[in-house]
Amino acid sequence: MVHGAIQMSLETGGGPLTARVMTVIRQRIANRSLIAGARLPSIRALAQSQQVSTSTVADAYERLVAEGAIQSRPGSGFYVASQAAPLALSEIGPKLDRAIDPLWVSRQSLDAGDDDLKPGCGWLPPAWFPEEGLRRALRGLARADSAALSDYGTPLGLAPLRQLIGRRLTEKGVEASPDQILLTESGTQSIDLICRFLVEPGDVVLVDDPCYFNFQALLRAHRVTMVSVPYTPNGPDLDAFAKVCAERRPRLYITNSAIHNPTGATLSPVTAHRVLKLADQFALTIVEDDIFADFETQPAPRLAAFDGLQRVVQIGSFSKTLSASARCGFIAARPDWIDGLVDLKIATTFGAGRLNAEVTLAVLRDGGYRKHLEALRLRLSRARVEVGARLHDLGLTPWIEPQAGMFLWCRLPDGIEASAVARAALSQKIVLAPGNAFSVAQSAGSYLRFNVSQCQDERVFTVLKAAIGEALKAESRP
Image 1 (cartoon, rainbow, N blue to C red):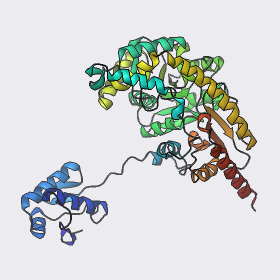
Image 2: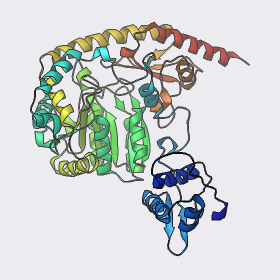
Image 3: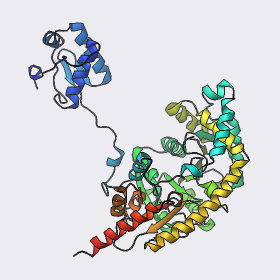
Image 4: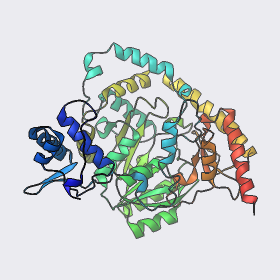
């Protein structure tokens, strides 16, 4: 494209002339009137045609070069730069089911309006959190010194909270000194830091099938190769696990142990020992996500406890039982890895979120938190029974009967695709969690994950019944 064919006008818009020149060029690039490689008018030519000074155009061009929107070629002029496509996580990897992918449930749940229902989301309703304890913590923090309200936190994070977390880990059989604990903004950030620390693009990472969908989304962002093994009621399928380790040599294995997401299953001691033997044999690091620990009525085996934090890194957060808004998580790892993780944390977020850590500490120290957990476990137990019975009446079959937690992993009647039911429900402002969002192998197309705490509205079952009915009719048509 020759520059003489480019038409620009500064007649509309206000503000400094330099900014107006830049805006017009950006708009032409955005609507593809100027494509990558197109030559822009010379400084003098554009200044004359638009009746502005050459210094105005020169300044606009220099700023656009600094932005990366255009390029300067000495002796030739200015050209539209190639516009790199933004990273689209949903486009990384094979297009197995683009309608519903690992980010689908998160986007629908987080974008849902106040009137929408979210039986597919992964958190408690606001009324199920310890609201009064949070308000007491915030009132107390309002009287704290200015450093607690305004200053950066230390690299490892608030020391009293790390000490308290260490004591809580000991109750689960995991020995970790405060210096082995790094506070993070969330469980998600914990996994992100560990991936930055331990894997490179192209490395093989092992996950369960099904597994938490955001594990997949994060791993796609790190451009690793995901492989999966079937998950059983006692943990990963050991034969498949051993085969993948021998053939693919994965760098990491990311899993839940105490309460598996989405199935609600619990790792058995026998499976845990075998997994650790395979990890040692094949130099595999295990990331144990333990964010559902406070839902347990009886402690389940922890890989980190059996291993002593040698090959296992344990992460946790308080978003499931304390607050999804006051983001606070942690990493417990071997001492020689902590410094590297701290460096990455500083590089990516600089200071620790001290305000959230102070709120979390205050609530955990409040005697009401343990009472809240006791009441919450009982409430969830009742909800699992009640919701399970309602789903059974609609023809859904639970994969197992979980002993704790908020999830029921249920199979739809034969021939019905969960994705179709989820799309039909979404049109009625009900967000469901279809199985293939959790499955790397795309082998869970007939499953839905239900959050029993979010299934307290009758509309959930009315809409679900209608969606299943429509799917059954469609299946029976010739």
